[in-house]
Length: 267
Image (tube, rainbow, N blue to C red; front, side, top):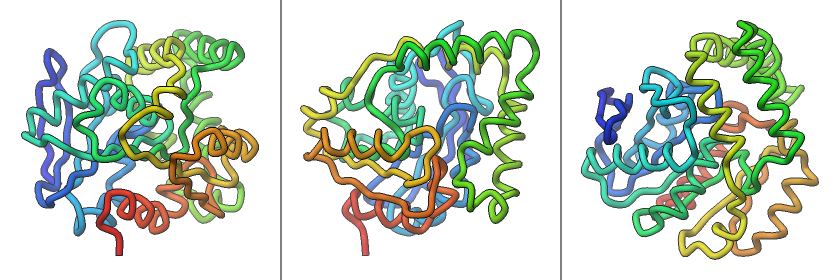
């Protein structure tokens, strides 16, 4: 993967590009992550497709631009990055918050997308309770208590049976949280609070789409995932039997297989 900085409008974006492949897959990380989470997973794809990963604004070493990073702004940054790379069409895989960005791209840039994969992500806007929780997280960050998030969030992301096996991964996510700039975290939280429901956008979208759910996801319980799948009979649905919210770590081969099949280059 070749790393570089690209200007997405006025926003410097940190990007990695495998540079080879007729079809392209863009991997969008989740909240409190960065493109580094895809480092090993990308190797499962790059022999079959061109892979692009990037640090979304407010994460990794991409720039922070203002006090709120809306999903529409993040989607625009991704689209401008792909333009700068000279890639006209591509598939987007969005993990968790990255899925919210992918949904915004479905609405704003459908003509550029070959497919969309929502990996442990949902279409609905935040509930009142979830908005309140995000506001509490903002207050924790402002109070200098980000370490509390770093301790709680990673452990909740993995299925209980995987915590010991993937202890190094849990620690990696903790470290990512601690090095994410406070201003970036706050801007992203504010943007997620404002994001709109895109359930109908996805249902009516001409872009082929797929959900990948973990059966042990603490953030998207099975009943919620099953209800969402039932509301979208037009979508493909893949269930990860032994995963929580971090399926690309917990069952990477199964995730990669599903994505490659969706893109049309499966075995």
